Length: 80
Ligand code: FES
Image 1: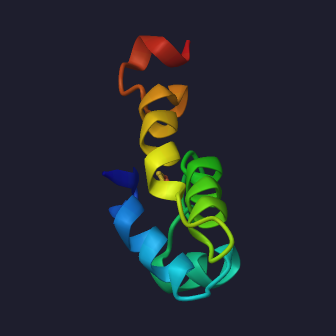
Image 2 (image 1 turned 180 degrees about the vertical axis):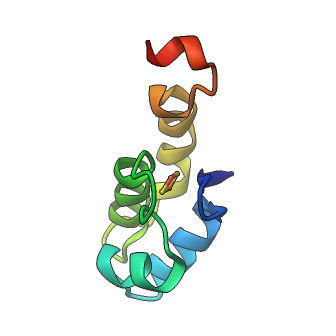
Image 3 (image 1 turned 90 degrees about the horizontal axis):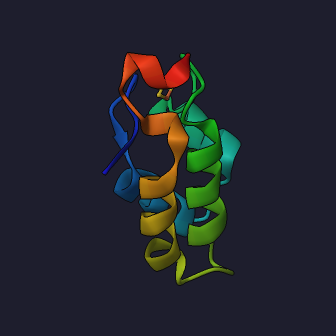
């Protein structure tokens, strides 16, 4: 699933980097996530936090949280 629409960064890419030991700042620099509109930052940070070595069950919890996120409602009227 795409987390960062602006930079086309998926949760899998973020999780892979997080599992490799990178923190959010490193991942942001590497992938460019959350460097344009910023709408994805909280979701991206959640992925990093939940996929770090101390939280191995992140992907299971994350999927439902991303689907529920209002930040990704693409309807223009939803933001008004
Ligand atoms: S969606 Fe990630 S910077 Fe815009």
